[in-house]
Image (cartoon, rainbow, N blue to C red):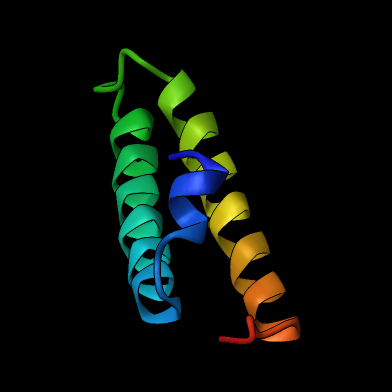
Length: 67
């Protein structure tokens, strides 16, 4: 997910997306422990997506966009 796509989301959608991504990351970590994950780079990508989501969420909280 790119930063531009994230910026188009509302605050509630960003929160939901963070929750979903964290759940996916947790499941992927559990599967990695049992040796069921072949694409381990997905863990890194999910962590980066969460960081992007949280960064943009914090930016929106700090500076609300005037309409």
